[in-house]
Image 1 (cartoon, rainbow, N blue to C red):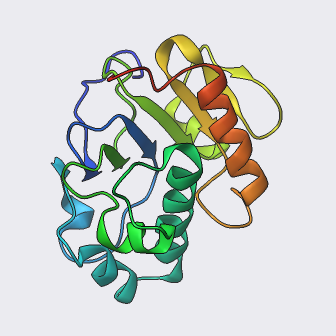
Image 2 (cartoon, rainbow, N blue to C red):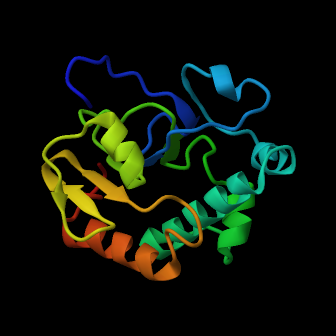
Amino acid sequence: MVKGRAAHAVGLGDANYRLAFCVANRPALNHYPTLDCMMPLAPGELTHIVANSSNHWRKLFSVYAKFLYQLDAQPGWPTRWQDYRDQYLLQAGSGVALLFSEPDTNHKAVHIIAGKTYAAELGLKGLTWLDSHFAISPERRLLVSPYLDYRQLSNEKIAMLTALIHRYQLLGNGD
């Protein structure tokens, strides 16, 4: 969290998330532009967002689901990441969130800032840049990664991001 600002999570997904991507934009439809709390997606809501907004959101949700499958697919998940995306991503009990607010590093979760530009806008301090794409603050469970887009967060970079989370043991036991 940037010093001097109140911690108030706003976004889509599980309010008790263990991992969240933080993005600078929101879907420009329905109540999403004025959302001021955490809200889990209802079954079929992700499909509604994708069908009624730009292709950007389809790509974002798809890359997020691919990342989660590579990071730590759970027993009981569908065999395909596409089915997980469509049936479970960002729903209550999923353990993940898409935040439209800045990260609350007091929350015992991994926060991934989607994009260097957004990280710069947030004025985050204490990050160690590992290369031109990734930065980390392990003690705050905070990372910066490329944006959730196929070209920016490619399969190779998804593998790098998952390796960082595992190397620094950011998703601890039961945290």
